[in-house]
Amino acid sequence: MIEDKNPARTPIENLGEFGLIDFITKNFEIVHDSTVKGIGDDAAVLKNDKCSVVTTDMLVEGVHFDLSYVPLKHLGYKSVMVNLSDVYAMNAKATQVTVSIAISNRFPVEAVEELYDGIRLACKTYGVDLIGGDTTASRSGLIISVTAIGEQSDDKIVYRNGAGDGDLLVVSGDIGAAYMGLQILEREKAVFKANPQNQPDIETYSYLLERQLKPEARKDIIKLLNDLEVQPTSMIDLSDGLSSEIVHLCKHSDVGMTIYEDKIPLDPTVITACEEFNLDSTTIALSGGEDYELLFTVKQEHFPKIKANPNLSVIGHVVDASYGMNLVTRGGEQIPIKAMGWNSLKED
Image (tube, rainbow, N blue to C red; front, side, top):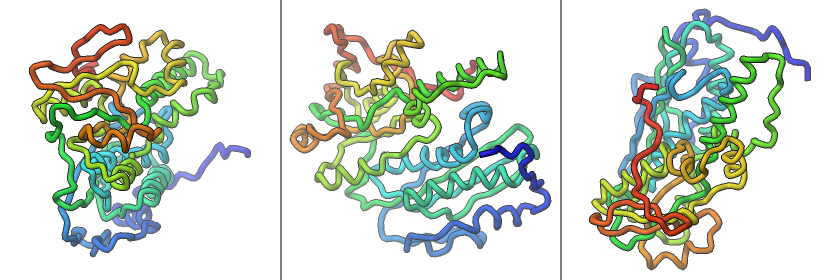
């Protein structure tokens, strides 16, 4: 296919704020009965007989994403995913989202449309309604703020503070891939800046790049646990790194944890990439972040139900708070776990 070197660029001011809202929301459909009124009034109207779960995340250009290698459609998709992941981490069903954006005049209407194509795909794939948001101007790049709303019966909601002594610590999927995908993108960006004629060969890293650019929230794990009749005692999503999330669970539940290095699930491509970058794969798993897997604890009695499931890995267990948080290495050495995950407020 021949690439169009001069794509259409419609200035946003041609539409105005309300015209832009009509343009980007015209193809969104309502699928939940709890959405009484979505976009089109002063506020959305929701109605249900369960507990509501609400979470908000903000993505800022230059802090959370780099548009030199992040496609706008992927960014729109990911902005929804990071919020749905928080809803699922409460063992809840995601039902609605609001999306607000601040954009500079360097973005034409077509760019905003591409961003919302990704948002719409996420909404369709995960069965959530877009019910509102805001648009405004920005003098410092693109800013995206998403609020996700979910629902669950009171007795089914899972918090961070329910882990008990002896509970098993379980993680979904594999971890570390998103961070290594970011390293590859940053490396290729540096190579391109040094030699713009160089074309990156990144086909062998497709899994790692997908995990960074187009992560998937683990809605399927919530359904799986429900089907298995396994209710976690505590749960959190892996957004800032395994070590940081373990610290959160321990702090809120007032417990300690022991995890085992040889039980941490790593995709072979992560191990290969770590060797290429001369990085320790366990360190990457502990501190990488952006995996959006679920980390949770379950009673030992549920072990027979989960032990053979390829989507779940038991990586440790809960101990008394006096024992602290420790990683047992492959060599049997015990190393204290500290929060090493990504901190957006830390100066570079």
